[in-house]
Length: 488
Image (cartoon, rainbow, N blue to C red; front, top):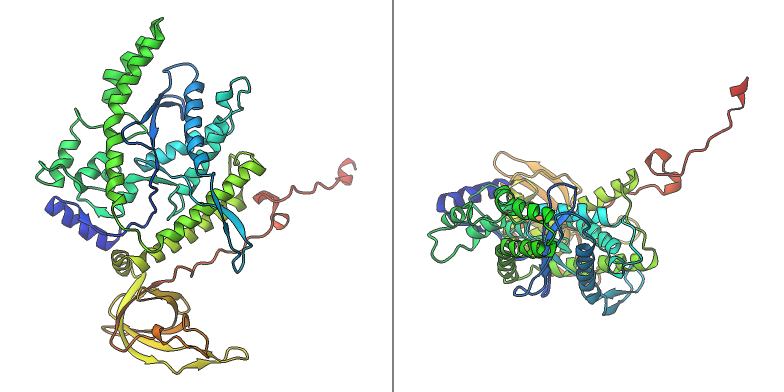
């Protein structure tokens, strides 16, 4: 947690109301998302108890697994609903023209989006997907054909949830906490009911704190899944499980279980749509559209993979694939932080308190500076910025400024002083050619600017091909020479 976030959390605790941090939404929200609210049954790993899901807030679909026996019918119905929702987004595509380093290709015009209440639900869907994608499909039951495919899609969505800026599978508590800060702990912010009580309290509540205290009352509080409340398990769920086990009228017991779980899940279902309404009302940041286009591209690529290959994802990552995945997450984190800083004043202020951005006054501008790195001279203006912020960056780092979005600045020198630090910056991009210079990227002396890391400053490291990777790290198997001297 940054210094600024800690200060605002203390302010929220003192006033009793949540503090708005960002008035721009940095993740795309679909007009028709698939809400998913699963419950996990205690006992076997990833065994579902119930799932409430749908795209209509007034008509959710409830799927309930029997307390014992096969969960195949319930999983078949879940697979049909989820894959049906995905299929709807595979009906229309568009031609993407060729780019500098990429040929022309087709891409779906939209992509599916699943919204869940909290990060624990993301982890549960990951476990469920890993379990289902390796299950052999029962060829005698047509409804079971989609269960392994459901596992592959759930694994894909869970993997995308680990990428900052991705919006394929979004926990609502995390997205709400990106825009509001409450007076409770970050752990309590993962409870959707408490978090919404702080952010959007009922009209009769004196404050968000009072609404949160009322929301956590044991008689009315509903955990948002995937685990159920221990009191609910003991007092209501366990008797129905026993009734189902000892009665011959199991369909009647299952109907009673469905009514109980529908009553149990409905309040959280309503809270999820309340959170969606609040977030959807926020205007999108400029970088949101670019990230959604990336999500559409990833969805298209994975759909193509399932059609052309179809093998489930590996049970475990090899060393190189794990390193590549980690590098991609680091790249996505750096890019998302930088893009948020370009769009959002709060993100810039938060980075300044951590030394990852600085604001200062332009003192000098050398607009007539040219360099000749090879054969043709290039226009490279230089400016000096005086800042009182801590600067923990290094010379050579590429920076961006929200006031000149297309320009890039390279740190040439950092000269700390007693009160201020002088930072020399060279403009390296956005000036146009020498014949048609773009003077709009030149600030005037006295301008107050904020500089952050450029969204494109991070580069993926180069990884060796498989045939040059040691077998201990997933490369080709080692050669086994004949031990001719073993018999001697």
